[in-house]
Image 1 (cartoon, rainbow, N blue to C red):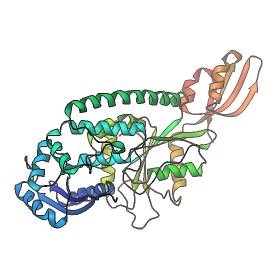
Image 2: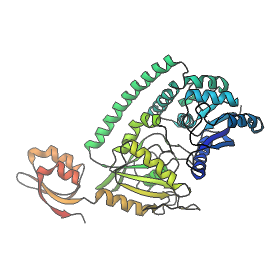
Image 3: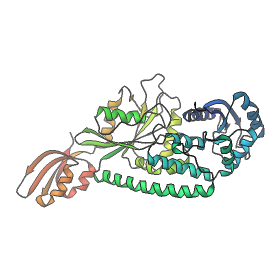
Length: 421
């Protein structure tokens, strides 16, 4: 049996001018399509603030009620976050199920989540959102069945009873704490061998995973390629791969969830464990889709999330990806034009990463007594040996080191005045 495709009427109000309204509606249309639905109509209204009862006012709600049959609409999506009572009132006034922007994004995340931890994070955000809106969502669920806004991760049915929701939230938090303990252990292992971390960030579908896969192919890196597809929120999980530029220039490349404008706070909170990988980075690669004319919107969406997770001050390289396609757009400020598909500009990106991460490298001389062999062995796993001499009381080494290694092994340094060539 063919799945039923929802036909959606978008509802929005213009508070910041028509240009901002159109940008927001364009993004909302993309989100609706990402959820597997189609937009058949738009009802917008210029007003300073939403109507407290129905968001758009009774007159506009009556217009929607009259146009819904002609458009064969089955759902209203409001470009804002609504209370439960407003959802109920607008649904009753129009005769259609209503979801808001937050519920739509949560629904997309639910259908895209693959790993166990992503599913837990998404469901936690959904249950917290639903708990405060049961007064409006109950009626909608009875009308809509298993449509957009009602789906949990893996097509599970979400709870509608407050007591069951509270129990489920407690269980999800417990399981996430357990998962986070495992991640913390993995991160500690990585920090024990202090490799630099580069995190790919940016608007969803800007091509972060394509850039990750370029590095994996070009540098023959270990680890499977990451999932990439031309759709919003194709990647919801963290992928970490080790990239070796040469023997002493290694870094961990992190790919994680993409952002959109007004990403729901509950979702950012639920994904804090995932997004903390970004906050731990030494360098951010901010990826923008050069084929889209809403580059400022992409930038603002990413910057807002980076600020929320405390990563806005990290060093950053801005990249305009998909430069091989027609219709390239630019931004104010420095940005590197690249194509992860053709490789255009990627060599320059590697050079900028190299300078940002490894400009502090120096050749130093260290001496380890025989009873310090453990410390020497650990260092040899991290640094590139230039020369090694065995003496009567120990071993003398000349090594290429970075600032972290020089601080960590400072007591063994006997000479430190050779810049990297």
